[in-house]
Length: 185
Image (cartoon, rainbow, N blue to C red; front, side):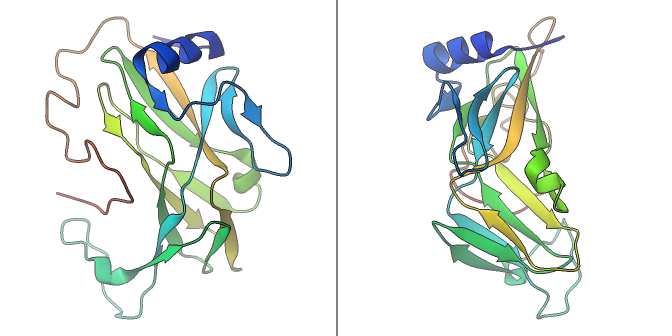
């Protein structure tokens, strides 16, 4: 298994629409960087967020998750995550992962150095859609997440061969998502 370089990512983005919209360079000035990097792609978060709150004093259950624990906030600037809480967002970019590739997603150091953890599970082969991102505020202070700026780096790994069964073959439950998507069982 090998990690794809900027040249390979660019080729797949332009020829197979692997990333759309695609920026073939890093955008940095006054922003948390996004776009193509040496061995990955820094994705942006959109303007819609679901911010966790516990007004109902309910238990978080991934099998019976309710949207009552979130309020939706749209902002073209930023949102604030309460202390020791989290929010969900969605990438601006739509990813169309080829059959012989998978992605590992890691948070950006700018956020990590301020106590914000970005969590995303691996993106499997033939996934198609936006990616829901989780932002955990591990600090005892309110924290900002900037809309339309970089939040996570996608690392593309090419398998030694195509898998027997891809995410599309399995009819993955998060396929073709277009916005922030809550847990499904």
